Length: 272
Image (cartoon, rainbow, N blue to C red; front, side):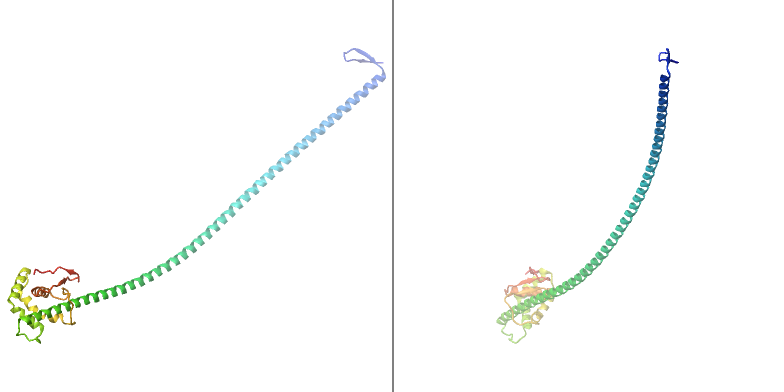
C-alpha cells in the first residue's frame, strides 16, 4: 500500500493498480499539455507567418499602388502632352485656314475694287458723253429757238416796212429794208415816243436811234420767212436793240413777248 492525499487533504492509501492508473493519467495529461503547447506554438508560428505574409502582401500592394500611381501620372502627363500637341496643331491649322481665307478675301476684295473702279470709270465716261450730248442738244435747241425768234422779228420788221411804204410813197420797193426803217427817224410821233421812252429808261437817244439801221440785217443773217409769234430774245440783241424793237413794235401795234438771258419767258425790261 502507498499513502496518498485526497482532494480534501485527507490521508489515504492506494494500491499499486490505482497508483499505476494515476501515473497513466499524469502521462496523458502531460502529453495533452505538450500537445496543446505544440499546437499553440504551431498556431503562433502560423500567425506570425501569416502576419509576415500580410505585411509582405501589404508591401506588395503599396508597391503596386505606387507603380500604378506612377504609371497613371506618366499616362496623365503623356495625355496632357498629346493634348497640347493636338491643340497646337489645331491652332496652327486654324491659323493657316484663316490666313488662306484672308488671302482669298483680299484677292476677292481687290478684284471687286478693281471691277468697281472700272465700272466707275465707264460710268463716268458714259456720264460725260451723256452730258456732252445733253449740252449739245440743249445748245442746239436754244440756238434753234433763238433763230426762230430772230426769224419772227425779221417778219415783223418786214411788216413795219410795208406800213412805212404805205405812208411814204417816195420809198422805192427795192430799197433795203434797213434804209426804209431809218425813215422812222423822220416820223415825229415815233421820235416823240422814242425820246420819252429813252428818258424813262435812262438810255441815250442817239445810241438807240443809231442801232435802228442794222435791225433787219441782224434778223436776216440766216433765215427767210417768219411765224406769227414775235419774240424779242435778249440773247440775240444788244440792250439798245431790245429797247428800240419794243418801241417800234408798240408804235405799229405789233404784239410781242420777251426772253431773258437764260432763254426763259420774262417781262419786257423797259418802260413803254
